[in-house]
Image (cartoon, rainbow, N blue to C red; front, side, top):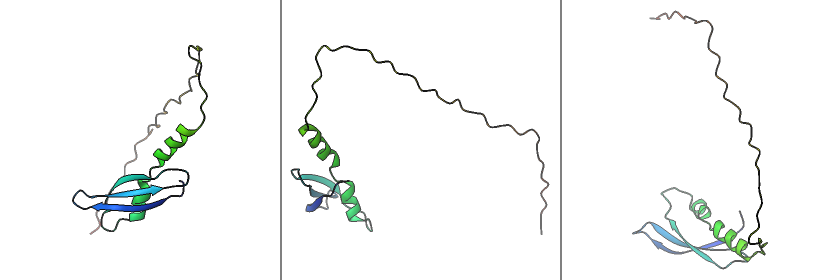
Amino acid sequence: MRAFNFEIKSVDTAHGVMNVEYTTEGHDPVEVGVRLPMQDEDEDALIESAAPEAVWAMREFMASPKAIPTVGRKGRIERVEAVLHTPVEAPQPTAEITVKRRAVL
């Protein structure tokens, strides 16, 4: 998780949401609609869980240099299948144990 700042821009109690603006170094601000916290819920944890990490990651991906594949390139890839373990059946009891129950009064 990267460090970020936030500011609650507005609260809409009728719809149960708040608009939170997130800022982090190297990115434009992102405003996110976040549900209102429940009574006794940690507001900071809720705001942290709604942080737009995926938006920032996509922006970084889009800005990074890319290798350009050659159009028409062909090839073959063979995968070696992993050996799956077959489930082992639980051993069956060889003798049945009988317990006499005694009522205590």
